[in-house]
Structure formats: C-alpha cells, structure tokens
Length: 159
Image (spheres, rainbow, N blue to C red):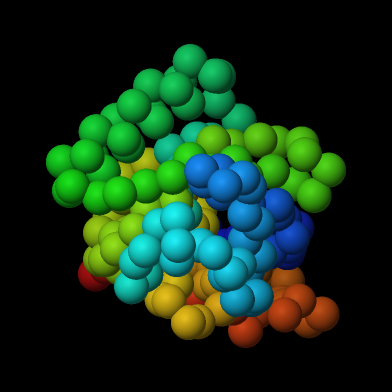
C-alpha cells in the first residue's frame, strides 16, 4: 500500500462535497456534523459518499470516468440502495468529481467498492456522528503534524 501525501490528505479534508438533493445543495465537511435536512431527503442509519472517477487521485478521461460511474451505479442498483448525486471539488471548484451519496451502504461494501474502483478515500459515517473520511492509503511518510486527523480512518488492506 502506497502512503498518502500530506497534500493529498489535506486536499481530501478541505474538499467541497456537495449533495444535490430535491431541496438544493447540502454541503458535507469531514469532521463536521452532516447538515440538517440530510435525513429528510435521504433517510439512513449511515451514509457513504463514493465516486468511481480518477482512481488513486490520478486524472482520467471523461469517457473513462463516465464508464466507471455507470458500472458503479449498476452495482449500487444491484444492492438496491437509494442515492443522491454529489459533486466533490477543491474549495475553488477545481478537480470536479461526480459521485453518489448512498444510504445504508455497509462498511464492508463501502470498502469493497472503494477498492474495486481504486479510490484513495471516501466519506462514510453513521447518523448522528461527524462526517468521517476513510483513506485507503498508508499514512503519509512525512508525518501528520498540523493536520487534524480526528475524522480520518486509515483502512488497512485485508490480509
């Protein structure tokens, strides 16, 4: 497992995570409570924000990302899960990645899908908890000083 970089981890924690619901856009922020109203538009015991775009945070063509998203959607449909569209980007709106906020995706299925689509990180948390960032890379080799990682879960690969 390759290590995350401080920059990549910082980018994930500072990203703008938009949920596009019927009443407008709800913003998610790792380490913060989910916005009020989320449970009204997508009731769940837990939520997961996942994408199939740009595996390993490496840019891919729009066509490749679109094909991967179609496969992800088919997988979510096969599991019978409700979802809302999302858009993640840096705080200035650069590096946009469409994805899905999924209701009641188990942690095991979250991890399996993240690995299947080569994602370095997803958001995954339970109702009533702060939004959590799951990272599928080793912690940065250059340390974590100055980065608040209380909302980060480092996921080790299965043996």
